[in-house]
Every structure is written in structure tokens, then in C-alpha cells.
Length: 461
Ligand SMILES: [Zn+2]
Image 1 (cartoon, rainbow, N blue to C red):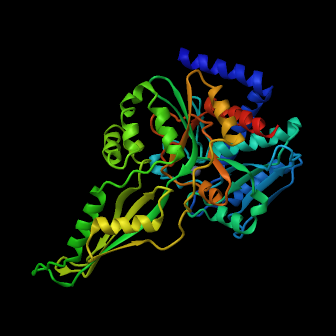
Image 2 (image 1 turned 120 degrees about the vertical axis):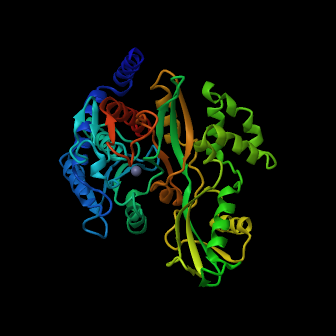
Image 3 (image 1 turned 90 degrees about the horizontal axis):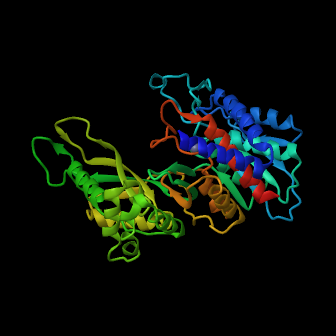
């Protein structure tokens, strides 16, 4: 507790010294906005994100800033506002956060999920971490830029998009129909994460890249027949063998600029000394898989950023106990490395399964785009790095590729640098994002808003 207090004092000092008087006021307004936003139920499905879009419109217009609600579904509108800058600092900065949340299983919650209840220093509610806290902080910073009359050297765009949690329809609609309204040099988005290690190092992970969710369908084929007569070409047996081969195979290791830097920085931490001898081995084709398997022994999460991963999740076969079906199907949740193409992955899976009786096909439908990690040398990345390093007693800042996907990958595909900003610290070991009793500590919320202010003003002033 003494340690915590020390850290808070450091922050208060930093916020007054570096950010003027915005610190405490920003914290209060962020708290108010988050409370209002949690009370607007935007569970997706169905979404109803227009509730958030209209709320933002009313708050932003009250400060005399022009804004727009736009989209093709009146119940699922997106929100865009812009503060004009001189342009001498460069192209715009985009602050974005999705307006929808995942649904709740009310029976599993001990508090009302859409009441923004405050208890023991925490605010509870769906969206408290994913990602209405970021949306509230961005709104507070955006309005404070206007109120304080800061001279902006570039435009600042504030976006809240619908449907991130289901099909990313909001961002795709905007890119197709209104890209000029959100086009920017770089963006601040969700997806970053900050957490304390056991040696009390605060690791700030700036998300610069994402794995690509790729659904793969395996279909075993054989001859139908009576269950009383076993057949060598039983479709269920072919499928079961294929699943086992695929799940047990080691997928190749491929690093990128982000994961390489990430591993190097972690290997310097006292709790990750075991990682050091594996680094060189990861770089050679002959030793990389063994090294990745060693890493998996210590931390499966770290192994999962080294290669494409395979999780069979759904099975369908047969309709009666005594009928051998002529086909059997499995769906596999594949998270592809962004530097591997879908064709490469499917071709490799076919080689691993090595059975002409099993079809391996990508599932039909929209795919997230493959993109290069966002640059580690932009003004925004450098400013984030500087801000996070100054914000904590023992900080480390690393770029990070997330296993999960966000709307950021659609903008990276357009050439925009997109960063998941780790302004909030993860609450304990496990995040409650998408879970029950989702919450954020109020002190964490206020500190995050202060950090965001430091980053944004560092880029636009
Ligand atoms: Zn989210």
C-alpha cells in the first residue's frame, strides 16, 4: 500500500508539472462520461450504438464543436468530430474507441451491469474496461483540448465506431463511405495493455499489430453405411485423425519487428531470465520450433505470438447411432500471423493432414486484412514511449502484437499507423474484459486520462 501511495504521488506531481491543471479535472469528467456511457446499453447483438452516438453528439455540440452521426443503419450509427489544427505539425491524429459491448450473462454478475455502480474505489459495468473507459477518456481529452484553447498543429479527429465486437461493420462502412472524415497519419485505439510484474516493473504494451482470426473448416468424406459393418473410409475417423495431426503439429515460427522487440525487452526482466537463451535460437529455422516449445513450457501466451495457432472448437457428424455418415465436419479457430497469407496456411494444413479424404477450406465470409506492424518510429509511438516511461517508477515500454483482433487492422490496411494505447493498468492477473463483474479502478481511470492527455498534447502541440 505504501508503494501504491508513492506511485500516486509521483503521478499527481507529474500531472501538475507536465500537464498543467488538467489532471484532476480530466479525471472527474472521464468518470462522469464513463458512468453515462455504461448506462447506455449497447450490448452487441443487437448493438443499438446510436444511443452512444447521440450522447456524444449532445456532449460535443454543447462545447460548440461540429460533429456527425453517420452510418447506414439508423440504430447503429457511428460518431465523428474534428478539431481543426494548423496542419504545420502534419496530418491528423485520430482517437478512436468502439461504442458497442459484448452481452452479459446477468446471472453471473453480482452487480447490475448497466448501472455504473461505484464500490470500493471501482466502477462496475459492461464496458468499464472494454472499451468505454477509453472512449470516456478520449471524449474528456477531446473536449479539454477545445476548452483550454491549445493551439493545435494538426487536426484531432474523435471517432466512436459501432459493431467492433461482432463484424466490424462500423469501421468498414466508414472506410468505404466516409474515409476522408477519419483519414489520419496515426490513431490511438484500444488493444494496449499495462500490467505490473512480480518485480514491480510496470510493462506498457503498445499494440502495433494483431493476429488474424481465420476460420478453417475440415470436412472428412467417406461412404455411408450400416454401423454394424466398420468401414475403412469412415468419415468420422478421417476427420478425427486430421484434427489430431493438425493440433499436434508445430506451426513454423516467424517473428516480425514488433514481436522481436517484445521478446528482447522481456528477456531483460528478472522474471524472464529463462527467455534469454531462446532468443538466438528463435532466429534460426533449425532451432526455432524447439525454442518456441521451450517458451510454451513457461508461458503459452508468449508462444502464441510466435506462430499461427490452431484450436479445433466445433464438431458436427452423424444423425443416428447405427448410421455411418458420409461426411463429418470440424471448425477450427486459427489465429494467423499477419506475415503469413491464408493460402500459405491452408496449403501447410493440407500437407500436415495429408489425407485426400479430408477437405481443408477457409470458412466463407469476411476476413480481417493482413498488415505489417505499425512503425515504432512515428511521433505518436515515440511520444507514447516517453509518456509511459515518465509515468511510473520502474517502467518498460514494448510494442506488442495481440492475439485478438480490433478495428485497428482495417485502418492499418489503409496505411494508417494504429496503436493500442496502454493508458490503463490491468486489474490483477486476469482481465475482466468480456467477463463478469467487469470494472475499472477509479484511480486507474483518472491516471489513464492524464496519460492520454500527455500523449495527445505531445503530438498535436
Ligand atoms: Zn474492445
